[in-house]
Length: 443
Image (cartoon, rainbow, N blue to C red; front, side, top):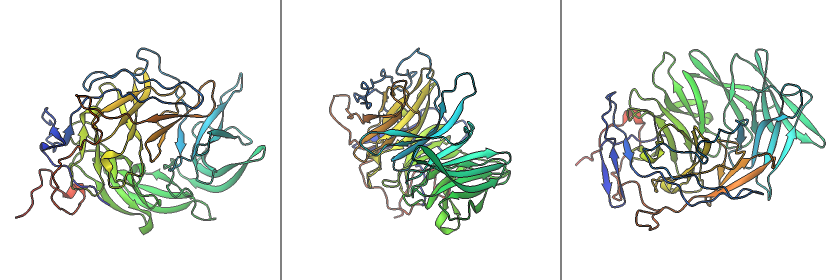
């Protein structure tokens, strides 16, 4: 599975255009195709379960500082990390028990989100958890927990048993550092990386059998990230830094072929190219790269001959923008996928909604107590945002993608962001092997 290289230069067509950056590239790297378009707030409203609708954030133009939903107000307290299963049915996090006059007592909590109403189940054990423990929900409702015990990382499955919590011990891995990867799409397996000085160990810590954690492979270089490219849990994308140092490139690891590694994302020889999200249905890829000369958020299509693009509307000064959910089910329609982004600024965190075909970033206030960076799209375009505020311990806010309108007020949500002409037929190749200038077809 490979993505195709970017083409240099402007592209024009009936439906839209993409122009290169007006500023020169000081590093001499290939120019990435960029898109221009305003970043504006849409009319969509969030409808939290049991609370008032979320209000849209003030509009901000691309190139101007983006204000949060409540500019000037102090940022909200950072809440524990929240992890969702690939299908969004379950979530898990560490949460704190109120223990007056003592240190924070952490315990695991599982959220059920696929029923008529969301609800949370506490999973405390005999001792409080350490704050550095990691939890990952599985498709059967159990929660995998990684604990650090001296130089060992232990793994257990937690599940509710009447009034208490059941725990199934899976074994341990003795390494200095080890981190769980995002939940596998198969719903039963869990994987972890142990990064060394020259290589990275890939472990299956759940779902591999009854003999405990299983060492799968030693991957050359220092690997991080973790994005699943299919719905079976076979193809895993990792961001790899060479052992001796150098630019970071995304590679694909085929777990069905002994963790065979192949190049996936190579935009320019010296650029850092990382894969942030991928949608297996449409092939849409969300990418972060400094190939345009500075760090930018872009998108491409797996196996496509069209260029990787870096929309101007996703570039917000003094804010970080990170995608966290892509609308599934858009077969062969990557430009129609709705994308949810977490925007962090001085005012706190809020929501960005964007579609590649629309070229506008709609900024909306997040519900109070949003578990920032978490959420899942339904196939029909409804974004579910888990949150827990002072009045509600477990709830979901609903957002819909706003309609796209052009400057004259006409709905133009289907506006393409690539030329309407048919692209030349070509075989997709790794980005490092593809030309970095405009493609030409042989006579």
